[in-house]
Length: 138
Image (cartoon, rainbow, N blue to C red; front, top):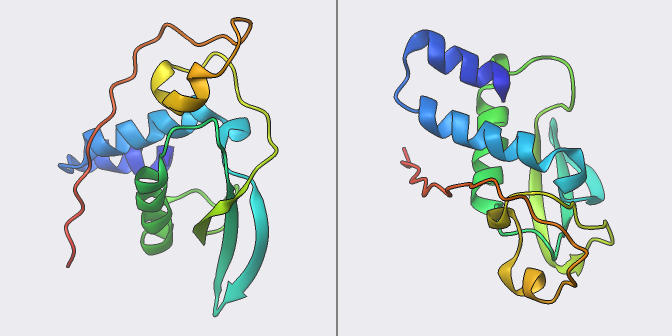
């Protein structure tokens, strides 16, 4: 995502603020805040992952879908390190057993899950403003 953002800054693309927003989500969540893989298979040349839901995390499905699509269609904008382009399908029925990540901004937690937590669970005081992203379909 950072390579895509660098490209947007260098070329002055209008979607630079959106790319920066999406990158900030990925960086803030970190690897422990990502959905866990349930299973994977291939459809043609594209890797497909079925993901488990993180009950503690707010719904970033739309944002993650945009990132996945950018990764698939613009693979040249991404570094060769890390994961290869893949499609991710969320499985709302199967929940991940992965523990919640503490100290994220409040906007990163599912509000009903957060209300059920005991005081030892800590939330960052850092503000995070969600952005509504409208994707044009060609």
